[in-house]
Length: 158
Image (cartoon, rainbow, N blue to C red; front, top):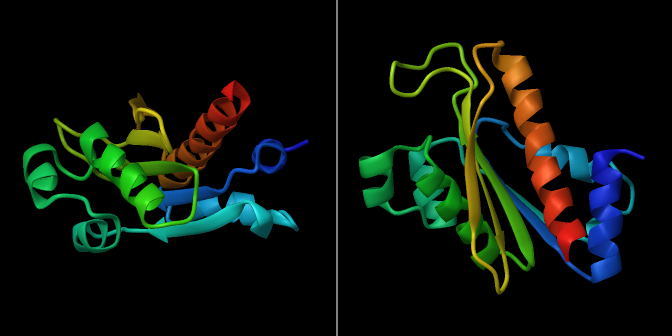
């Protein structure tokens, strides 16, 4: 059974709906979930907010957060997940924002990806993973797998 199938089964059993908020993965997390027939009963929506303007407009990320911490930060990821939760009919939301590459900087290297998981009635969890400069496709795939893992762990804990 795939990780996405497991997530959908867990959410279905708990009567929970899922939303995603993605930047560097460009909708790959939502695609992994919606590739499975019948996912519409638990997958509510996915936001692909690649630009900072879209993060602010669609997810309510505060300009101050972007100015102080940048789009690739746990603070931004948390606001993305919370915004997806607030703007959807979902009970749980995962967000991804990072630098898939090529490029990056001394302060925010290629392969740095920030994640957050928000759930109704709970605190928002957030973390940063350094995948390294393994190439754009690899960073995106690893980020997608990690985001799915966060959803699975959160749903399994309930």
